[in-house]
Every structure is written in structure tokens, then in C-alpha cells.
Amino acid sequence: DTAVSQTPKYLVTQMGNDKSIKCEQNLGHDTMYWYKQDSKKFLKIMFSYNNKELIINETVPNRFSPKSPDKAHLNLHINSLELGDSAVYFCASSQGLDLISYEQYFGPGTRLTVT
Amino acid sequence: GENVEQHPSTLSVQEGDSAVIKCTYSDSASNYFPWYKQELGKGPQLIIDIRSNVGEKKDQRIAVTLNKTAKHFSLHITETQPEDSAVYFCAASRGDKLIFGTGTRLQVFP
Image (cartoon, rainbow over all chains, first blue to last red; front, side, top):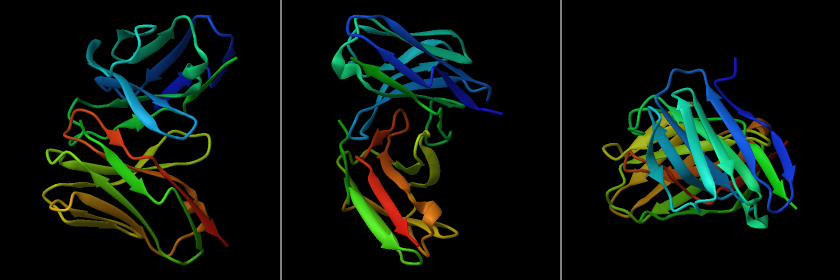
């Protein structure tokens, strides 16, 4: 059973297009996250949601719009894709907001390539 | 904001040897320090963590040490095995979000 799943696993698209990445967790967690991992493997948080409410927005361009239809899902929509958006995007979840108390579980990642 | 530096960026060891990865952090308010292992094509997975009220923690072949005064913490892997080969990330947190180091690619040669 996959705890945190993402679709698609690979996404190749052209500059200027709009695309979405979906994330689902079956752990019953309240908190979900999106991370971006660049070509140098640097991993940086983008957003966090708790009970469908936006908690963290790490100065991500407004071309990126997360949407949480329910606690188990956090989707990431990206408008007007740019070359610099090419990266691996990871979804993660935790039982609650306090990361000292609750472990974060990561999905398998979505490799986005913008040409 | 918090900044986490990690060294070395690559580390090659012979099977059975020990491996040490070091991280420093800047925010004295950080009080939680997890370590993640990322295998090829997979997401990071928590392998061990330490809280600021503890100086050392061990779990079988893996140990982590924390020096709050110097603001650095280290991961120690003993008796390395080929399956330990992966990218390892340290992170620091006040509890709200994780700030990751730049990663260490560990290769264990048989």
C-alpha cells in the first residue's frame, strides 16, 4: 500500500503550458507539503497545508497554485511553465503541523521537464 | 532565516568502513534535526532524528550527535554496506518546516 502517491511520475511539457501534479495520502494525516528538488538535489519547501488550509507559502511565484480539495489530497497546478521549473517535485504528509512530534512521509516524486 | 550547510557533497567508502556526514545550522532556535536517506528514484525517508535536549542518539549502525553550542550535528554510519549507498540529507527545524542541507552522495564499494 502506497502511503503518499503522486501522479504523474514523469511529465514532459513545453514552455508556456499549464500542468498539474496530483498527490494523495492514505495515512489519515492532517498536513501535506510540496517540495521542489532541483538538478543539484537541493530540496526546498514550497507549500504546506493543514486541514485544507494554507500554512506555508515560501515565496513561490504565483504561477504555482496548490489546491487541497480534502485532507487527503494536495494538488499542484503550474501556469505558464518556464525552463527553470524543471525539477523533481515531492509531496509529503505528516500527522500534524509540529514536525518535532510528527514524522514527514514523502511521495516518490514527479520529475517535471520543461523544454 | 535558517541556513543548513552539509559536508562532504560526495563520500566514497569501502564496505565495512565508517562514514561521517556533518552539518551546521545558523538558527539557534532550531531544535529538531532529522536525517533523511534518498535512494535513486525515490523520495527521502527519515532514518534517524535528534532533538535539542539530547546530545547523541543511536539506532543500530546509525548514530547522530548534536553540539548545540557549535550549532553542528553529524551522522555516523558504522560497518557500511552497499545498500547504504544513497543521498543523505540533514535538516533543521523549529517545528514548522524543514530546512534541508545540500545532500551527501554516499557510495559504498564492495
